[in-house]
Structure formats: C-alpha cells, structure tokens
Amino acid sequence: MNNTPHSHANAKTTPAIRYAIQTAPPQMTNTELARRFNISPTTVTRWRKRQTIMDRSSAPKEHGRKKLSEKDLVHILHIRKAKGYGLDKLLETINKSLKSPISRSRLAQILKENKSILPSP
Image (cartoon, rainbow, N blue to C red; front, side, top):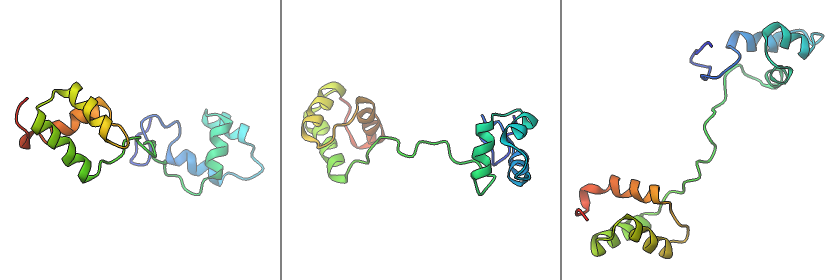
C-alpha cells in the first residue's frame, strides 16, 4: 500500500482516494464509491464525514501508564538502595506503599533507567 507521510502502514486508502471520495458528487452513493476504490462503504462514509484527508494517529489515546511523582520515584530508589531487595520483593514492598500499584515491568524499567545511582543488588 502507499506509505506516504500521511498514510499509516495499514491504510486502505491514499490521500488521492480520500480526496476523490470527499469531492465526489453527493449523488454518487457510498456503495458506488466503495466499488470504484475497492474499499468498504463504511470507509467511504467515514472519509466523507472528515474535514481532512490526513490520517489520524493510531496510537492509543491513553497508554495506561501513570507518571510517577518525584516523591514516589525517590521512595522506590530509597527502598532499593537501603534494603537491597530484588525485583519481586521490591515490587511487593513498593505496591503496599503506593496509592496506585505499578507493574513488575514498570519497576524493572525504573531501576534500569536509574541504574547509575543504585548499587548492584
């Protein structure tokens, strides 16, 4: 498929097709346009409603990960440094004290990012 700067990798339409859909006469049905461009009528409907021919972002609006406060980050690093806990024990301890628990992978990422200021376990 055409991977122009305005199309994502799985796009079924190009900016040219989108423009043709948006400028097609109103008498032309969505089914006719769908057959012409080998796409679904639903896709035609969506592009007819939009004001632009640019793709929208396909990234999640919320990735689910909350940003830790500086206080929580310092707390995590302090416990790791003071107790020398491994990942699982540290996770258990941290999640008891934080308002919203973090995942094991997020904790591992935090430790990796701050490895230069932490002693080896």
